[in-house]
Image 1 (cartoon, rainbow, N blue to C red):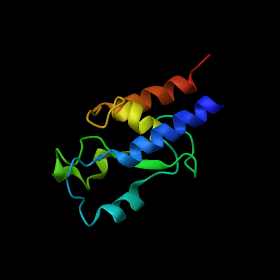
Image 2 (cartoon, rainbow, N blue to C red):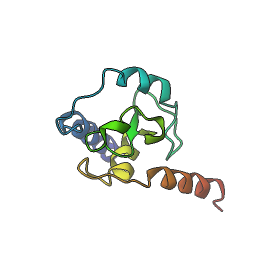
Image 3 (tube, helix red, strand yellow):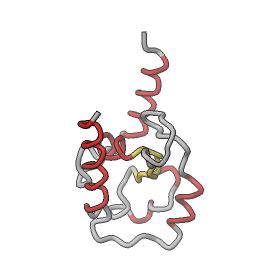
Image 4 (cartoon, rainbow, N blue to C red):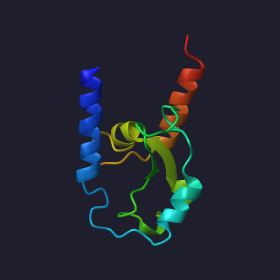
Length: 115
């Protein structure tokens, strides 16, 4: 239990301190678009969001690389912080996984058909 809590604390500190925008400026419309598009559950692990499991609207192609897709709903997926860092960014916000939507569908199917 303590190990799980420690992992959660370290993950959240990493998300708080690390500059995930790499200096890029968000559009003034981002807050509204985020509210309209974020789901109530993580699309990868399918767990409901909450106080201890905050959800994030992840850009599949990072907006600092493709600013024209910053407000494009087809470029979003809702993820919990754990799945966001470990699956969408492969453990580092300096990386990104363009197949995250396919991966989410694959894991959903695996859970539905598990023995």
